[in-house]
Image (cartoon, rainbow, N blue to C red):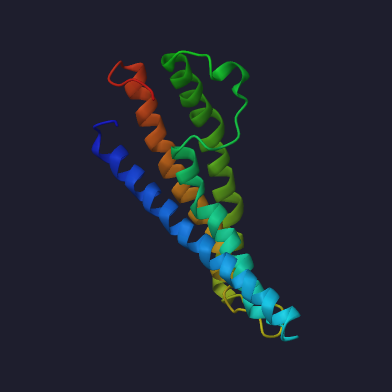
Length: 171
């Protein structure tokens, strides 16, 4: 592990978010099971429960993205990459982060800022009767994605720089 304090702190945040996502996944599965049981056993429906499952699903993807990046879990074409030296991998990851990931996150932030702000200004809720009044929080997860994935991208930059400066070998 890189001995740089900021990188280590970001990694710990990503790990904790990954653990939180594990709990959210369990809660989502239990709620989905409850929705099915209520619907098919008791002939009852709950828009709020169904929306809660959707909200949790969105939270898993947005809050877990940094954790996934930290553990090299994002989709990658490994045909060439897996055979490369740690130094070459560090160059590819560094350039990919600087030229693709960070600009893309900046674009998402710019494009979603007004969308999220408008949802907060209206305290936007569900359009469904009996739905959750928390749509503004759900939309805020877009910016949470930018923040958490952006932070982990910075940690990955630090890790790759350490490899390139011969301060650490890549796992």
